[in-house]
Length: 228
Image 1 (spheres, helix red, strand yellow):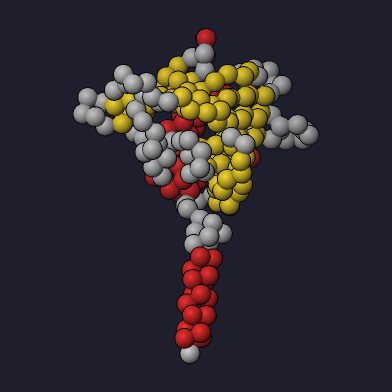
Image 2: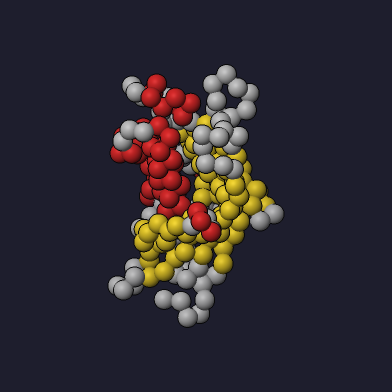
């Protein structure tokens, strides 16, 4: 009888482990983008570095380039952690922040850059574009388990796929951008949670995309001893 009880306990344990595996416990898009405490384990004064690549042959868009994006952490006057995102270098350089440290603020910075570019190319209201992106996240997108290769090892992660404008009532006004897709890969095992963000904008009637942008985590620089 004890043997049967042990088997029952073992079976229940296996069942529970299966239920809480990535396939059954997928976080929501809102949790991945806005709520996960990815930066809680990173000290103020540290900086996360990302490599950014932009590829396009369309003369109506800003040209291709490669550059860096840096997320810098510090403490405000009350000792609360905050973030600043330094976008690019040279003539393209600008900073966004200070920002709250829930989720990873680099995502917000990249999406805001998209809003500005699309508004410049398409016209219309930046608020409308921004709201469609937020709606896509709130609606959930597609979240799937994925393996991430980082720092010489394979770790578990989540891939979030969003297509904010595909079903929009005003999709014709978005032109080629109507089919724009966002793929975001997160993992608790990489510094800052965000491993990669890839944006693909197809070009109607063409084999090659209109625009591809790729942001990939390179690493983290530890906080200095004299950092706030």
